[in-house]
Image (cartoon, rainbow, N blue to C red; front, side, top):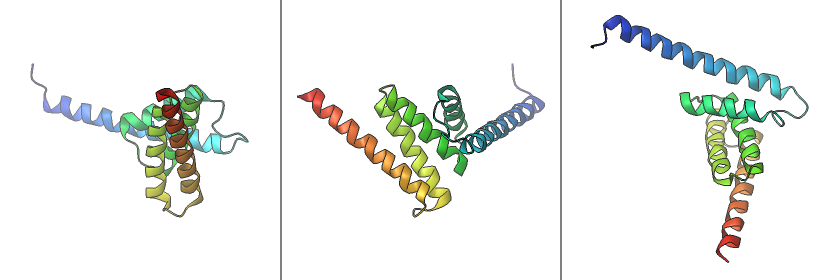
Length: 129
């Protein structure tokens, strides 16, 4: 069965609306948790949910960087170091694009990425010995 023009428009509209809602969720969650004393820490399910929205909808705005960093921290704690590094790389790209290379948040994300890479390398060295 061939899709009608109205079905195509409806599908496109639904996709656009879903993306908007994903953006709203990530921005609202980031705003809420940045006001908390410990930020995103301790809210693993929510960080994973936001990270999934960011990945699925390829969200690219400054607020998307922070839940990715929190997700990386949770993954590193769960011993999923490679995935944690991937999330940190994405966070660095987003933050650097929107804040500039000299922003403190970019420097902190780069530091976390470097720490994760060092840990991954030392783990790989131990496994090969």
